[in-house]
Image 1 (tube, helix red, strand yellow):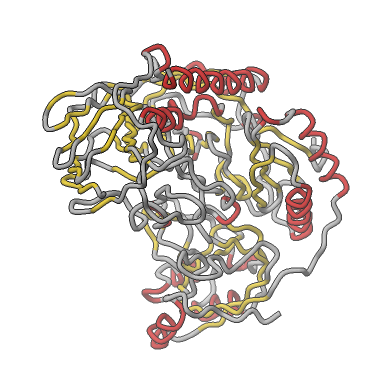
Image 2 (cartoon, chains in turn red, yellow; image 1 turned 60 degrees about the vertical axis):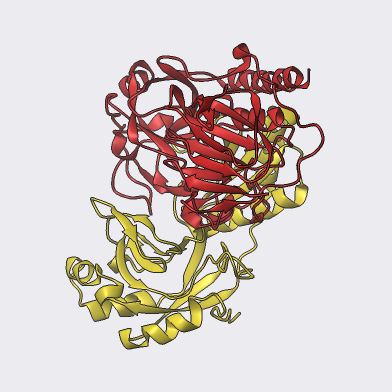
Length: 325
Length: 240
């Protein structure tokens, strides 16, 4: 019972919770950038939380269903339409055979997750259905959806019903300015005291280079480096280090000018120093940032980050409870 | 002031880095690779995956399920006790076509180093390299051991896209690219061998600790070599 792609939207890809275990070979985890939204959408249609769904960014696709299905759209406020009739986000609704699912203009956030009862059924690659376009792996032939694609769906269970929703207070989108909590680290000592302060004081703007690999920020003050002799093998710019692994969420600043936060399709390593790491609880929010949005990095310590991680887990638990009722 | 190695550094709340030093050095890399083996063997609760690099090991964690501090202690102990095991890797011979369309920076790089392109090819292909790290892109293979006469700072402006299989020099390192990617390195040649091939078993060829040698071929041989290797049906014999 496949779904036909009438128009693919700007960049729509199959994503689940990703493929850990291959980063040491250069293959990133991939999977939904906003995991909480992906899980929510799946819960709403009665799927396993980690089932494959469609991640769409800024501009939604148009899809024709060949069989009845339950659908939910969570994450960005990208209002769904069924044969042109509006439906709620963060809620499950029915799409009948022959009907078309399309979207109105984006109202907030950046990425919406379209879960369909039964989940998107593409062959798993290295244990996941997530699309890693750079490596042409997973998803539909390792790429984003195209016009004319036919997307297969899995068998849906019997817990599927329409009319479920996630209450407003449990939906999560970035505020204004967006705040990304970060722990200074690794090479923090390489920059001057003044630059340490300006990094967290400045309001940064999301650059147009903002995708699944990473988000670039600009308009803050450049960072200045403490003097040192470059270690053997490191590049000649003071922002260069001997090539090393880039953790997810790590903030690298090539040339000291524009910070880049690496995300789910991260390049696994390289020769740029990192000032710190965005905490795991705030990674989902990055996936909802639009270009030009004001963003502040907020300094936190490890204890705060671990507490935020627990809180995020509790938040997910509350979503599970709310959808069950 | 030089730090006390090995040391454990947090990278946010879901990763730790264990550093053995901050330079390119085979002995440091052997320690990293051995620690990686130890950590995998130990199957510590809360450890999701590990990534060995030149001189450090990155460990991804899920600290909700395990005490963060306990993991730091355990990993520190493993790192302190690690005994490097040199010479465990395999040995590969990789065909390369140098220069021309296959390595458009070769001439400029040779000129900047005050040698002829032929000498540059000779220097590059007479060395046995060590695979220090795989990463950046799937299968991108970092090699150490470059003749210092070829060391060249990275390009001021990176290229947006270089072909798969590019053999390049960046600073004191050389590398074998896998899939097309952006790059600030100097392209000196290309190999039809794919270090990453999703439809092949094995998917990846080179691993940290392996040894790699380059075998120069004339440009006329490219099509034959490509037919042989790029499909993924064949790969260079490891001549251990």
